[in-house]
Image: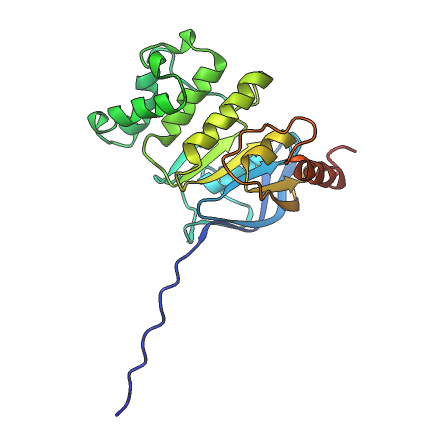
Length: 268
């Protein structure tokens, strides 16, 4: 009697983001400018990955490619195994500017994400207040943007990006305009919010310490055109509460990232 062969087990895909051989050019004032050249990397589901590099190296362009806002000149970007064709619904974005609407209070600025997606506000009101509580500003739910500090405004921006519970969070230098003390505090708040959520985070920054403190991996890029010059694992256990001042558990990884930036021509 013949025995039927069993179909192969379906292998669970761990990869959330795949960037393969990506080059991107854009039109400058008088010629084409190459922002990225032959960039390849992947990010597993649930990883927090920082993209570190000097100004103008194509970090934000790379984030735009992953989000689907722009299309690569060459190469391919995939999210959940599918080529990116447009911005995805299972994605949240936090920008360099908080982009709050001045005529809407904090809670209404968060819920605009829900309205934009055609979802019912009433289904997300409690979640919005819960997110504000997790960022420590629940008492400012009814405050207008002009009544909020820069750090508070950016916290509202983070809540807005998370309100629909996306599996992928893209963050483009969101804390660059904040003072050092506020920046350190909001970094800890961010880890508290996303740390146990299982979300995949791609975080763009030009701060070495910030990149290392937040991430499971740090991707280091060269000056323009941006190339990937290092992929540094940061195996420091979570929760992380010690900001990397001076000598700390993060020091070896800060040093490695700084050396990679030097090799990539960032400090030459």
